[in-house]
Length: 403
Ligand SMILES: Nc1ncnc2c1ncn2[C@@H]1O[C@H](COP(=O)(O)OP(=O)(O)O)[C@@H](O)[C@H]1O
Ligand SMILES: [Mg+2]
Image (cartoon, rainbow, N blue to C red; front, side, top):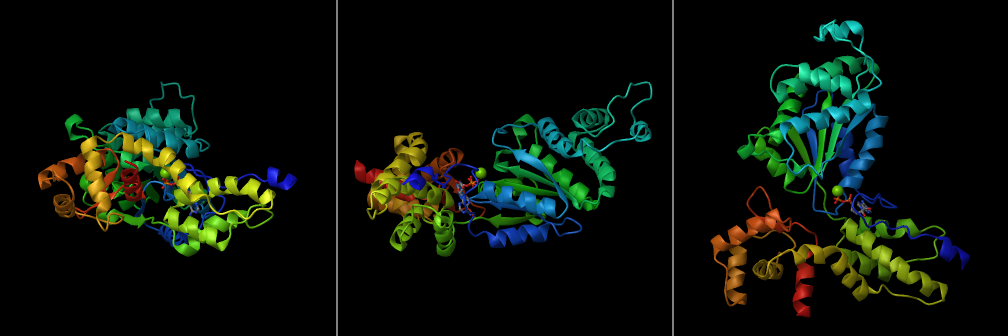
């Protein structure tokens, strides 16, 4: 009994929370290892997929691998970077870079060589942020010229240190946007910078993580992005990996044990999506604990868990949609392939059959655009659409039933 109280619930539903057992993803890890074995960086990585599929935690597991292979790791989460300017992007890169370069010393001679006048009192001699930013400000030209110069300079200082290169890892990179109206092209600058230094054989590699809108955005900004990135699309876990994600965390010494039947119920209702696996398992664990302690043989309280999932996860997103948008989303949820890809035509057709005021195709186009902006739908590079939130279709059908 004491152990049932002491054993904490191991499951971790939450953005970026490392799961108790990271299931599957062997191919993706292999792909990352292949990319960091490149001598000249020809391919960078885009790690993409729906929300909750496990991009952030996988990126976190790449870091120790990279370090073990003598790469330095710089980067950050760009969630807050909705309207970053070119200048801010540069400062972002210098900030991240300075964390790993701040212990590297620059000699007096080098400082003079790169144009700091001798009358200037030079206090800083390590490659910390202050040094990088003043070098940035002194360097003539556009943001791109300045960045290229600094990255090249930094590499001349680092290359003797027995490292293979630097990885610049940016999570939620779909937030970067070029803004023609403001004449700000941070994404373009980022891509131009890395393409240019990689051509000079400097081993600085980009690993960008983000929603499925990310890669089309990169290609929109610079067509060469198509060739510059290896796109790894994270999908739901297969049955075997889902099962491991469910049972591995509780296999040893744990009071709670899921029967094969419970495991199958969890796999089915999570759809193999990692966030939902963690969510359902966490709830089921809490529900099981007292029952097992009382000698009962519990089953997963599915209805309650799904109701909680609807409130905790889906309801916020749903409440932001207008009535007419909800009507459209309901039509979409009824399309046979709603969990996969669908077209404007699919929606128009089904709306004719199912609702009184059907949608015209121009109307559907327009509404899909605003649903894309709201993060409920996304459009892939081939003009097809999908739900941007896993299992959203099923949630919508559940809502419809309760009306
Ligand atoms: N391979 C995996 N096995 C088990 N759980 C996972 C796995 N990948 C992610 N998770 C869990 O799924 C949730 C979402 O992961 P996260 O990395 O935040 O997704 P994303 O960044 O794609 O939105 C977290 O609770 C995490 O613990
Ligand atoms: Mg994430």
